[in-house]
Image (cartoon, rainbow, N blue to C red):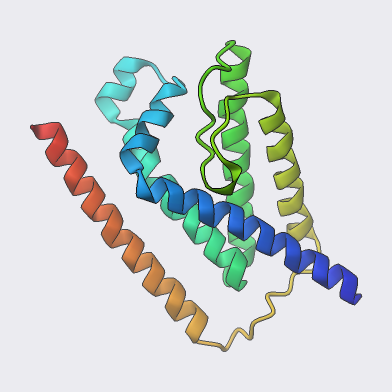
Length: 183
């Protein structure tokens, strides 16, 4: 593999990792606002949402997933599962945006967060997500090299520590949210 192709693949991984890390961290900082943002998409009936709290579950599952994907893309650990997860997330986000645009609801914010910002819904975001999906697919079907030795124990330990910290933050946020619902 030529050095140019190697550099392009590392750039794509770094680019995608920054996007997913910044989006996840932004949502981590304001999880209840992100939950309200998910509700604003109106993808499930209100009664169903009220009974099962799907927006709450989605809000508290998406940011650790985005941060985890970003870390995996950056370090090269669990690279293929992370690329598949990123691809699925981009498809789900695109479907949610397309549903709202087809309903004529372009007045709500995309709530993409991070370096992607929070613009009003538009077909441009679908095109952007398609481009990001192409980047994921190129990395999936291209020659994948993490640049790290698999025997290196430091990266998996950092990843494990990050997951534990995110789990503790998630637990704290869930506890606070449920106490808020009880009051």
